[in-house]
Image (cartoon, rainbow, N blue to C red; front, side):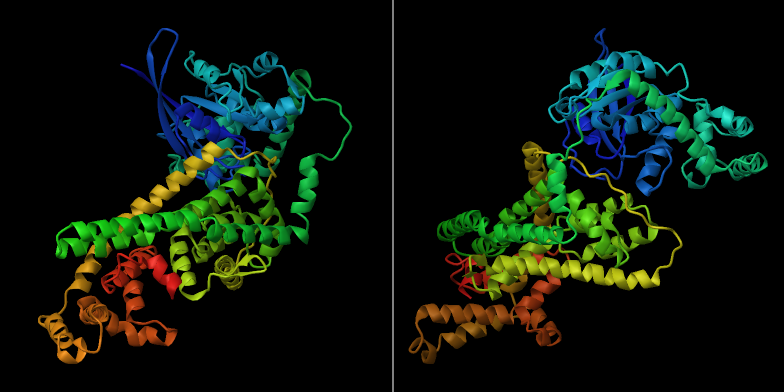
Length: 640
């Protein structure tokens, strides 16, 4: 029977944990070049073999990034609870600490804390490409001896060092022999009291319980135990802030000695790097905003201009398929159902896939290059006036793709008031589900013209997204005055180095998002399209017969051509169908908005999903148009 091993990956934000996780598991968890991408634990499984050929079932847990085991935000509580609570079901047998090799001193602080938890530890020094670029020399053997744990150099982007890491994982597990620092001397009675009443593995684990007692929710600590711990802390003057400060000083004293012994940094004259020069422009207090707006302008221009070619190809393919089925299948309900129901509904959503893919493509590039973190930095001053901070921008921008993961990413915001406001206003941003609706409405209303080389439809699309942003910050400003808090707000975010986008990762991300868009929305659209086709193709008894009799009279056959008569018959049948009757019921309510009964039907069906609006319009126009094989919905919009 294969041995099971539970492995946790921890590290500072933006240190490359998710890239290491993907390399170990073969999965494609989202990675990006800004802090806070992982806001919940991710799990993956892989089978390893030790030196004797025995199978090991490895369960990897990718934890949110944290700078220390003192949680300051909700997502930082997760590593604390999993690593410090031996009774937690996810408590690891082995911990892999992923460190940024270019900021090793800061990363060693968290590593030293994990070592003192008495859990087997492997230190991965990631981003070795940047370490070599900066000509930083690290003596890995000496560093391993000083820390008492294995040290593996790695470049997770290229999978350099993955084999060595897997070999280290299957070696016999050893708990570090010595404490990095002895925290028991800070308050012996408090540490001993906690070890007697709470199941923890080390003195430092007990020390963390004393410091974070108010934040512990997952530990099995009964109230009488809490009372005993609190009494011991009070009797022996255990001040959490002073203890944390003392611990930090002691750790950095030792870390500084280790760095001097194991790491050599070149003594080059201080000069402004290319990254610094780029930042001086992109984060400028005036030009930074204009550059951001210019980037958005280019993105939405591209969404309309570049996507038109694949959209036309998809459109013509559905047109040919509809024409083939209409002409080759026997006339009747099955023929009408496939052409007017299924294909019309599918075409109404698949035709917009190129625009959705482009939107995800540009967002992924902004994230992967590191520009998204810069936007958060420049927007902090503006957003604070509305009760938000710079970190609120990442959820707001991410919600352009999807609001659900965007709301989850608000966990990186430390201030609970700003976090709550961001959660409440994020759905006001326009997500990808609204893009087909916007595109349809723009095609119906805005001419396909260029003014001074600017695509008017792309400009209007950008304005619609900006309206969503203005609505979000406006509502945030209102909520700012109703939600009260004394908690101080601050904005701290490490600006990552600029990187070349990982095109394979971006491609996989786009494919995954498009699949979700197609299959999740597609199921609803197909179902509603079939139901809508039935409602549009049938009406009260005898109604359709009366319409056909009306137009078969001599007064119509002499005056109107046969094609016009057929069009009028189909139009009146649709208006007299069950769907038409439903649309006429709600038409008085929506008429002041300029909507007719056809759009009313689409509004009702779109309650199931926003994307259904387009499929509904496509089905309605297909059922009501005898020439549906010649003109698809996109063409009808352009014709109008």
